[in-house]
Image (cartoon, rainbow, N blue to C red; front, side, top):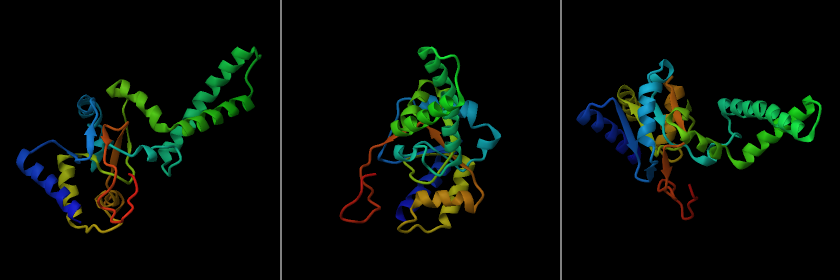
Length: 219
């Protein structure tokens, strides 16, 4: 609860003292990537003005790599995974047929390479593929946010007012920390939120002080 109160205080004081368009809250165990400001500048000028992003409650700038894999209950990620297989399956099949001197591809071969590429991408890790998006700010992706973790959050000013009001009406407790509270607002209040991929900060904290036990797990 104290963490949530501090978070609300930071939001409200930022609104009161600076009259900003956006508020960027970065926690003390998050280190910004070198390209964070160039990417944010591009997002401000070219992406966040779009209707479906304009009224977002918040934008997450970090999501744990272990939760960025394809095997997660997020429909958009499953569609991305299927699209990867549908693209790489025919490409790898054509390359194989040319290298092996085969007359033409078969649907079995296409299906094999599609499944092979999907399995390989999951084993290697989706977050490694996301690193290719760092080549240019325009390649960064903005997708619907999922639960967990708030090392770096971007709030439009109007949304920050709504978020602070919502959070004041909630009481955090063990198992219902501020990140869960923020995520609960999306369904409870009909709000939208998004996450920027790949991450724009690195989370350097090893343990959470909110987990009160003698053998804390690594984050």
